[in-house]
Image 1 (cartoon, rainbow, N blue to C red):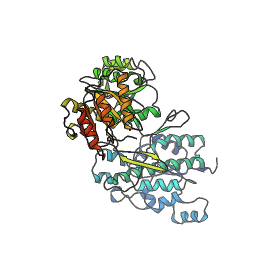
Image 2: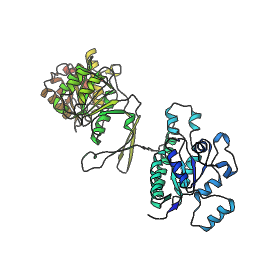
Image 3: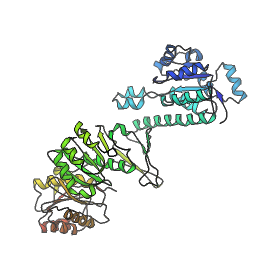
Image 4: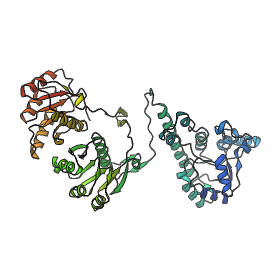
Length: 508
């Protein structure tokens, strides 16, 4: 370590005072002089310590309703002065400016104010000016000054000062500066994104403060980190920490289940549904979702949209699974499901999710709107002589919800509110269909009267012919191929009802 600096003078001006008292007590014992403003000044006095009001230092009171308190050369000169420069020292002496060795400052709660639904004027008033300037000035001059820009750092500074008898070293100050710039950059990003909601500039800015280091990434030889706050989304009631792959599957599961209003269970493996059923009650929905593919369900991620009770929990408990997500559990259900310590149980909270999604690609980032569109019966345009029945339309709607969340090329077969099988991630649509039919047969599904949903159009009539031969009686596809008529003609020939949704749902 190098360049020890003894803290003599500290500027303290914070919005949040919780956790500050022990640090103030320690600094006072070490002979530090405090400069402060407003509520923080009163706080320090109430602790029994002397404090110099900033207005006594500057000769100016707080003005403009508190908008201007610390923006003055006698404050920023003391922070930014370069201690080794004789010319800087002379100017401090000439103008009566004390060297400030420590700045403890936080920022107005901008994000919290936005989230509260406050008015625009209330939000604007929470754009910090003095605080952000103090942070940048002190962090810039880390050679001589310590900056603490978050209450999370109070304990860390106290430990350093206790261990080093009131001194900090360059390594400490540089690290505090790095953390401070993290605070200021996150704050500026939040402000920019607030202003960029209307007629946005084509600029990508994201900042996440919460970090969870994962056991590993997609594979054990890859490192993984989650940036975000899972506590906002879920209460974790049981089990080990979520892995990278768990998180990817949980994201897919949440997106899928949100398509359904009726009691529904979905089982996912590698982000694709291997079992989905909607029923009048959750126990029946679970039984029929599992029946879709009990082999793939092993080790999967399970999600439902209703409270899990004792009977349903007893049935789920028979299966080995990684993650179970529900909006509620009865006490008896939790007693059953927590019998195995490693299985992850999540209780989902009702909060809005982002409407944008992005990922790294090549040497940049791609961003898009989430696919928030789903076509129900009213949006399904009849294309064939025989029109789909009400039952078929309902099943087509059900299948369309699933295919939207299935990796392309995708085909979903369904019957009576239950997934029969799906063809997932194939390089041709006909292969996806053949895979789905074979899988349905493997698990004993009778496809006569089943329906088919496709994530994209049929450029050839072969899929329609194969589907009809398997017993499928209705098809939903987006249309848009120059050869649409060939598929329609084949459907007419086979007596299959076809509807055109007009919306493609590729999922790469």
